[in-house]
Amino acid sequence: MSVTRQARLLPFLRNPRFARYTIGRLCAGLSWQMLGVAVGWHVYELTHDPLALGLVGLWEFLPFFCLVLVGGHAADHFNRRHLVIIAALVECVCALSLCWFALRGLSSAWPVYGAIALFGATRAFWAPAMQAFLVNIVPREDLAASLATDSMLRQITVVGGPALGGVLYLFGAHIVYATCAALYLATALLTISNRVTLPPSLRSDEPLWQRGQELFHGMRHVFRNPVVLGCLSLDLFAVLFGGATALLPIFAADILKVGPAGLGLLRSGPAIGAAVVGLLLAARPLRNRAGDWLFGGVAVFGVATIVFGLSTSFWLSLAALIIAGAGDMISVYVRTMLVQLNTPEEIRGRVSAVNSMFIGASNELGGFESGVVAGWFGVVPSVLFGGVATLIVVMLWRQCFPQLRRLSSLG
Image (cartoon, rainbow, N blue to C red; front, side):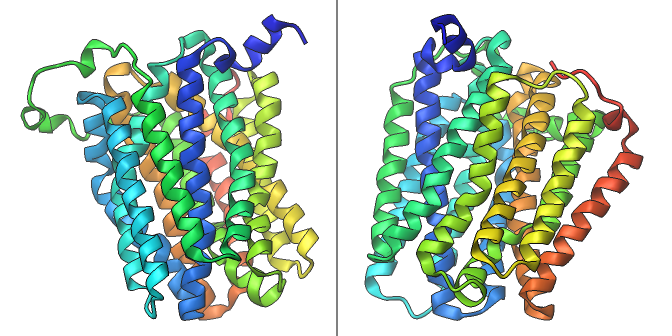
């Protein structure tokens, strides 16, 4: 492959700022995935209650939901780089607190919930700042390839994160948490070294409190744009109902009987599928039939969720999760491109906050929904209900958002 071709596929080969950004985000993503394994298994060991696993997602989501619009506003009026650095350092402290809890030998899950709530509050500032920061690093003509490359590399690391977290958990939860703290510290140091020239809208001297009326500009932009609203809400409800990930500790312990190491592999499954699709999209970005690709990706996610719920074989379950991740990656790619290309720079942080709110609601509330339904009706019925509901959402959204269904060009 020629150097020119490599540079086009992987923008970080010619942009060291993008390289530092991507590696820092990979470290944070790796840490987050390892935490997902450790916290899930730790809480299930303490409680043996599926509802307790759902509460992990709820405790993360509530502070995130309350603060994310403020975080988006801050990303448009403060230095995004500084926000990312502060957030990474706070998350490092959170991981160290979880390490201390594990060493003390907890008998209750409530201290873990408290640490997760602080993670959620921090992510309310981290997520919009990090998403909007990317556009300040790469030129517009490289945005599509950069988004695909960034997603692909993060998903490759996410493949290793849960597996590594599961293996490290065999030596104790404190080992996982200490490793996560080191990775968050690495993210902060990489971001400190990544100096960029910010647009004028981020260098205003006007106090933030004098512009409070601008807080909901991002929300208004989303609800006035049917294409952006359609793709964000599609992802919200599809993942909300299809959130089987929160129940993976139960599948690993009681149904598939593969232990924490097997749990790590199961959590890696969606990332494997997403990484493969991300690599393909980095090489050949989608340009046409964007609406069909978006709905098709979500439908594949729903069908794979149903297969996972019915499976009692570890390898079939892993394969279903891989396919679910591949379908989800397609919808994430289309959604991210639409949001970035249809958002003015001066409100990019606030729109990214709304995007993060939708993602957070789908992931964390999806986990809570799965935990509640599993507590009432059982684990397998909960997953099957989620998969069927996802397919129903796809059919309804195709009718409710004709602009999204007819969308052809992407770019």
